[in-house]
Image (cartoon, rainbow, N blue to C red; front, side, top):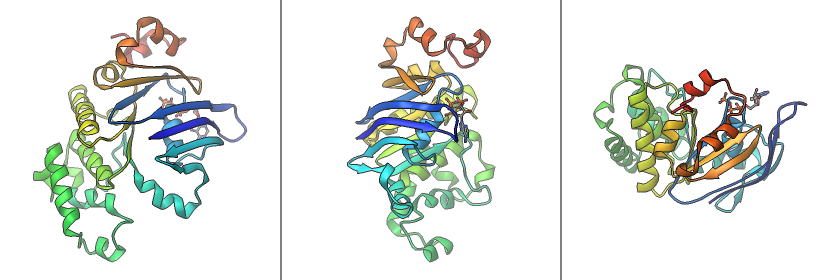
Length: 257
Ligand SMILES: Nc1ncnc2c1ncn2[C@@H]1O[C@H](COP(=O)(O)OP(=O)(O)OP(=O)(O)O)[C@@H](O)[C@H]1O
């Protein structure tokens, strides 16, 4: 279970962009965080694994308080949190298998990693996961030879190789075409279920968020102002979450659907 309590983040001396925020996530559900640009969605996700340092508050993952960890402890604890990025963050000149095995860095020796002598179990698991997401036949292909959707699948498998207790996805579909984007959302939802893995996604496309999520969290100015099932996200709720956002931008964000 992830329990965030009174989380506040202030960059420099500016106003807080997260304000005493509370959120609990558990179970194999896909939670989408929506909100207009600048609402604090990315900051929230990045405060969980301390890619961004929280100013105050608590982040507890299955009993471990993340905000108190030393740098060294954090390096180890971070492996428990998988992360998927909008820009995939793959190493282009490496193969799919090598990229996927990067999820095991920190678990295996540097020598094993450098010489590509991955443990048998890791290779087996990599193939299982790559098979599951449909990229096993690309194992030896260079990452830069893949399409966006395929690259994101590599990113997902790499994160899952860590055997994470939770998966965070920061706009995982924002660089993809609409059809591929839906496929990745559907994949993330199914994996959450199959692996009994809570998944939190920061997403702009509200139509997709509604279609694929079990839960929607709506943010505005660093606070959560909506937290419910997708069906409860009515036009009136949307108007509050996106108040002041020009109509054309809301349409872009999928809000007009
Ligand atoms: N490194 C930083 N330094 C200073 N301010 C920052 C930094 N990162 C984010 N901010 C500010 O914090 C606020 C929240 O940003 P954040 O990226 O979390 O919002 P968001 O909801 O994810 O927006 P978007 O959907 O546009 O990515 C914004 O006002 C942004 O300018």
